Length: 115
Image (cartoon, rainbow, N blue to C red; front, side, top):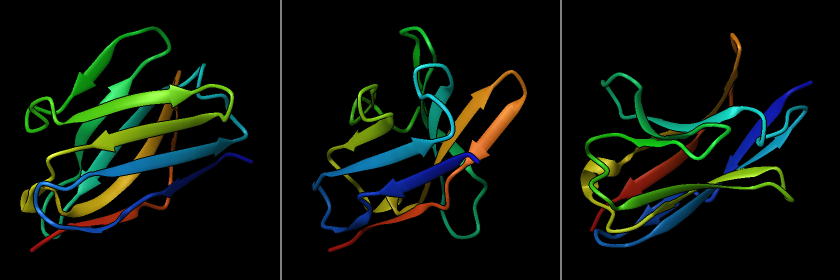
């Protein structure tokens, strides 16, 4: 059974930082393309960052160098370091794993940026 469990969300002030983690079981993050998506109320889910099995990394245009996606192969975990957070970053953040037509999602973790 595949499980993706996100953690690290919370409430921060503008300009603050958070580090999200996605602990995977049943799959290897080294084999799957790992991504972070987000969905704000009333908006469509959008790609935040994605790292494939090689070294290729993609970020949403809104990231503008503020976020970094990475993987810890020993812990079988994908991470998202988020700096310089803005109120517009408020959303539920989801971890996603994709490989050859298989796609798995975590349950999401809430990120709230507010003063």
